[in-house]
Length: 360
Ligand code: ATP
Ligand code: MG
Image 1 (tube, helix red, strand yellow):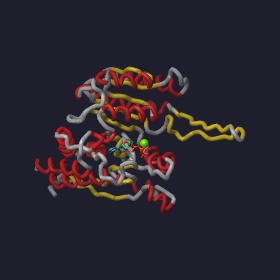
Image 2 (image 1 turned 60 degrees about the horizontal axis):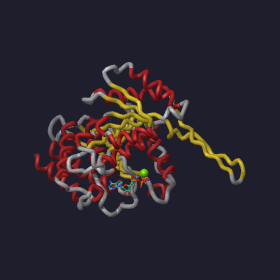
Image 3 (image 1 turned 135 degrees about the vertical axis):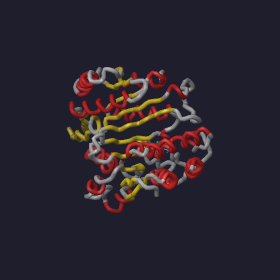
Image 4 (image 1 turned 30 degrees about the horizontal axis):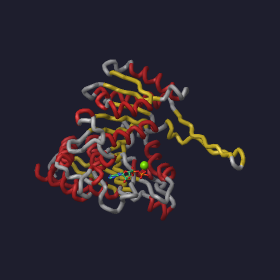
C-alpha cells in the first residue's frame, strides 16, 4: 500500500434477499480498486443483521447497535425484507431506527440516464434526465405516530399522523438548496400537497419560501405531487434538483428510477450532513424476493451506492473510475435482464472489474 494511504471503517450489512448478492458484487469491485489505486483501505465489519437473525433471535438489531455503528465512517447496506415478515416490521426494526437515531435526515437519490440504458419513455433522451431527488428522511408520513382503535366489532380505525417540524423542514431545505447550488442549472423544485393538506404541508411551503431567501441565486419552483408525476413523464428536461417529503419522495424516486431505465440501477444515500453519525449507502430497490438466489439481480444500484459512499468519505478518484466503468459496461450492453440484457450478476461484476483492471 502506498504511503499516505487512508483507512476507513465500514460497517457492511448485506441483509436479505438479493442484498447479499449485490453487496458481494460491490465488495469484489472495492477489492480491485483498493489494490490498484493503493491509496485507501477499507476496514470492514460484516454484520449479519437480517431476517435470518430475526428468525433465530427475535431481533434484527442487537441491543448495542448504536455503539457498533457510531465509530464507522460509513454503513454499506444491502436490503431488508422477507416474504414471511410484514414489511412494516422489518423496516421499523432495522432501517428506520438507524435513519432516525443517526439523524440521517437527507436521503439523496440521483437519477440519470446512463448511456446504453433505454428509458421506457420514447421521448426521453439521455440529456433530458439528470435529477437528484432529496427525500426528507426522519419524519413526515413515516413518523410512526398513530394508532388503531376499535369503535365496535366491525368498525376499526387506523390513524397515521404525518409530523412536520419547522426544524426538520428547515434543515432539509437547506440541504436541498446546497445540492441545487452545486449543480449547473441551480434549479430546485419542491413538492407539496398543500392544496389538500392544510397544516403540515402548508408549514412545509412556508418554510420553503423562508429558506429560499437565503439562496437567491437558486431558482425554486413549487409542484403539487400529483402534477409532478405528469411533469416527470412529459417534461423530464424541465427538472433538476427535487425536494419532497418522506412519502412523496419515496414514490417519486421509484418513478424516477423507472424512467431512467430500471430500479436495478438507482442508489440511495441516507446522509447525516453534520457527520456526527455515519451515513448509510444502499440501493433504492429492496430485497426483491422474487429474483433472490437466482444470481440475476442487477448489481449496479448497489455499486452506484458504493460510488456515492466513496465520494462521501473523500475517495473521489476511486468513485470516478468506478462510475466510468459502470457507464462503459452499460454502453457495451453488458447488462442484466431488467435492462434488457442477458448477463447475470457475476457477468456484469466481472466486466466492471476488468475495465478497472485495464486502467492500472
Ligand atoms: P422490499 O420489501 O424489500 O422493498 P419489494 O419486492 O417490495 O422488496 P423491490 O425489492 O424493490 O421491492 O422489487 C421490486 C421489483 O423490482 C421486483 O420485481 C424486483 O424483482 C425488481 N428488482 C428490484 N431490484 C432489482 C435488481 N437489483 N435487479 C433486478 N430487478 C430488481
Ligand atoms: Mg419495496
